[in-house]
Length: 466
Ligand SMILES: *Cc1c(COP(=O)(O)O)cnc(C)c1O
Image (cartoon, rainbow, N blue to C red; front, side, top):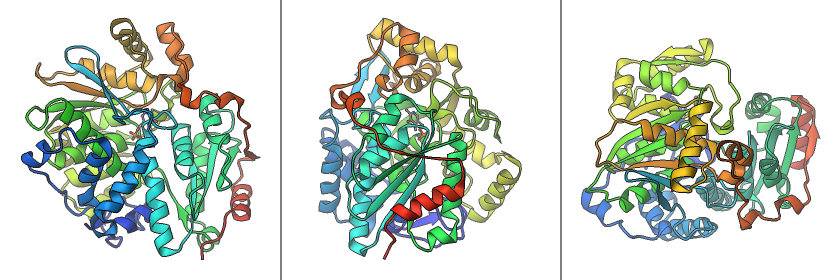
């Protein structure tokens, strides 16, 4: 399997290459040169497989010669063995039509564990083969940081430096990062906002003084391997609900468009997906783009669903590339325009191609709270604010009656206890597996919002690559 850049000029790479590269050298994102496709009979034969085995079968066409089937199976078995539920991503029924796909049974209580537990193991495997080291540098507004740290803590040949905006992540989120004791984990609280921290990370990727000494790696969802791992649970859910005979719709709380793009890939692979519903909060650039062709960034409004508080959605570029005729040169031009003006129009081909499968909806704070209250009062389910935005969109969707609608439950309600309590009157309890989080000792550096200070800290603590 070969991967090409959405901007057309970076070299094609194999799976191992794209996993270690993250972003393509022309600024684009890697996608498979063509989508592997399963027949209806092949999909039917997946029914009833344990999750790790289903993951092996769904991902095998993507890894090509980079991993043999037994190695992939071994990595999946280890990654998904860390989940607290034997079904890994269980389905829960809400009413005659609506279902929740619980993606939060991993170690850090959000869906990012599903992809990152595998990615950490892929990094370790590929680095040890090459006898290379990786210095992961990332910025987090909460969920990515803890999931990435858990996934690479104690792994060979990897150091991780995670920047979070000081005082602006929740106590649970901060402690999930700062109480990890492994010596290859470095947490840094930065004076400033998430955007300030993110800007420093981007600068480090382009700083020859750093890239000359360290192989700097990324764990955000521009990494293809993360999206690939998320394709699996779309298959798992649809098979439970009668695929391939019966089509299924999905409502996806969306920020960087990674999770919903994985659903798009599942459809391209032959899974009968009736519709993908992109659900946004009031930071609705994706809703405007999909409903009116207007992709223009405003300013970020903080909400109770912080992992969706974004204005520029990195993975949307992958959809525009695939729906717009896979013309890398044209897309590079379009994206340059967007980077200069923070606004662009979708082409007709992009808009129509997307609309064939994807619709969108937006929920404000009241609608989000009402969805949490509805699930609690009618189904005795506590759901988190991100999931609530998805459920609001699912219940409003205009779909044939017989089509089940699966809302992706992206975080455990205990991760956002205050917002859940405000909406339902009920305070969710932290699950036992993180029970002593508030008794563990924290360890992190505090640095000013100054690039030179952060670069010096990383240079002092990271092990140079050979
Ligand atoms: C990251 C995150 C999202 C958004 O997912 P994308 O792949 O960026 O669209 C939604 N909900 C939660 C809880 C998250 O952590």
